Image (cartoon, rainbow, N blue to C red; front, side, top):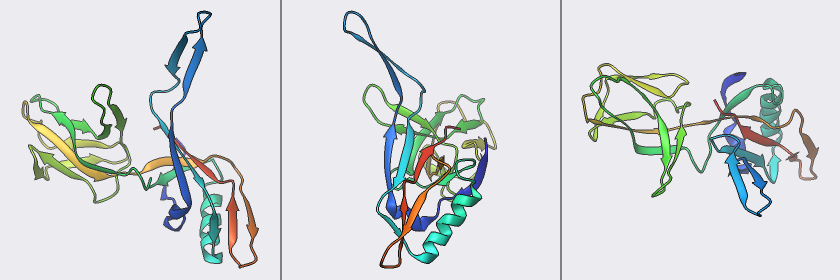
Length: 198
């Protein structure tokens, strides 16, 4: 994947509007019934800048960032302000053999929970717990979201994790509009971001 390991400028986060969307194909049969199927398994975040009025220095930051990404060419990291924390999430049960465990987030539902694989972890935010007690004998496989224990996890032992994470996104378009306002601020128009599935 074409990716730059840089974070979307924090001064612009306040202007982001987000939404989570799935893509579902629908076919209406002659009986009138619908057949529905997911086009892809994972939901994709979408974000847009709304009412984005920047100072001259903030506009320079954004303009530099956009050009450095070559528009939509290179993906980058974003902190989704509404969904970036996992707290003591169960990630695995020991079988006496396995040492590597994928980090993920479960969106609880009594019958059909949604499981989201997490690959991009905020540095120094990750804590691993064995049977509820924090442990340190592990390594994070960078950019994979995989925990590698020094020793295999003992049978029936529960492993959990707390961390903050980023979303991998890219600019939706290769261009954006902007205009100078009478108060000296620069208004950014029609800028959208879309999540990139890794």
